[in-house]
Amino acid sequence: MSLKTRKINRIGILTGGGDCPGLNAVIRAVTKTAIFDYGLEVFGIEDGFEGLIKKRGRFLSSENASGIINVGGTILGTSNRADPFRVPVTRNHKVVFEDHSQKSLRHFREWKLDALVAIGGDGTLSIANRLASLGINIIGIPKTIDNDLSGTDSTFGFDTAVQIATDAIDRLHTTAASHHRVMVLEVMGRNAGWIALYAGVAGGADVILIPEFPFRSDVICDAVKQRARKGKRFSIVTVSEGAYEFGKSPVIKKVDKKNPYPEKLGGIGERITECIEEKTGLEARVAVLGHIQRGGSPTAVDRNLGTLFGMYAVKFLMDGREAHMVCLRGQAIESIPIGKAVNQLKRVPSDFPLVQSAISVGTSFGY
Ligand code: F6P
Image (spheres, rainbow, N blue to C red):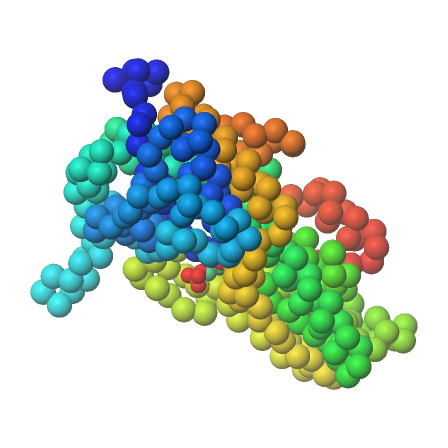
């Protein structure tokens, strides 16, 4: 059927992958825009693609979408394991993966859905793109605290994570200064250093370590020793969980085989802390911020970006754009084919203005 002739009366909506602040702002905007501007019915699929696979969902009214713009998490629930094309099942005491996409498609049709709004990061949107090729009319909305999705200047959730990490650095500053210690803060971001960079610069970190620039531990130690020589008796190091020493690999905390991203990063902060203590003789401590970065109330920036994305997603869907992802370009909300946005990590370039500014104010990137 041609794109323009598809009639849309009822849309599904799901949130997939790791949660992040701003998801409820998007759900609210999609639901209210769909109902108020287009007279559509909205059906919430629970726990991301798990709800599509297991047929779990419920209708959403404008009341259900009220009072949630400031609430963290997602009222629909999420899953970062569920993939209709790769469902883990136990057969003869062994875990094997089966394709349940046709069953998922059947559920979509039994619910009488005409389109699907998929809110997620790279993993969720890659799955959405495959479902689009099976005939589901899909629009994607980019979400992730990591800000590593190509095709959009920014994702919602990132600003909140940066603010939380910046607050943490501010707090570490006072205890670091009191005890004359080196405080190392490990933040999330997977294989992109956006959170560490933005929070590190905003918090005035002395050393920022990100996966894009493999570090040398001697350079880090020299940076903190030099500060000590100048009478600065404490230092702050912000390290992205995916950062690694030149010639080595990122530190893996655990492997979760059922997860599309099986390798869970974590532990580099601890290693750097030990190394600093050993090589400089200075006292050092580590703090790992972890999932605190994904929890709680979204910032105003993320609420507004979520509202813009949600409203435009419905508008683009009704305009006949299929298998597209809404995106931010400067101040404008546009869309690009999902296929062009996924499977290509957006990483920090070395000539990025914030990197250059950090270097100019004396921050070391450890290389
Ligand atoms: O992608 C978001 C993110 O929070 C990453 O920064 C982090 O590496 C990962 O998810 C953690 O995943 P999980 O919630 O499965 O521990």
